[in-house]
Length: 149
Image (cartoon, rainbow, N blue to C red; front, side, top):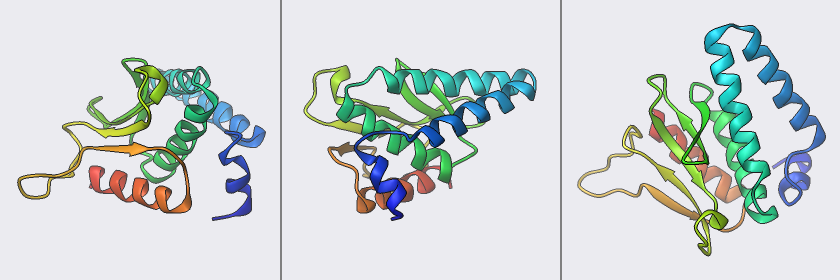
């Protein structure tokens, strides 16, 4: 993992990352009605992340980056106040539930019904997250890619 990414893990998004996201939101608004909807969803997700405790926020920011970089067809939006990512039909595929939301000891990455994670008669749809690392990132990326395949 590049040094730049590891230096922003504990502190959240870097100034350059925040600026890039704001630029992307402006680009989406310029695209018209669909772009505005996507930009508004992105802003809602960023606002929801900003309200989290520092530990939850650091995890949510890394999850957000992993999903947006590896599943660009998923649209960010909030779902019950949580960062979520929806398919082209507007159905939530994956969401991040921060531990502070319900007083839990860990945050979760949760996949909803449209996620294509089916594996026989039983498969995981929720993963506990306590820390971010290169290994965690690989697992999240693999799960997200499987969910949209």
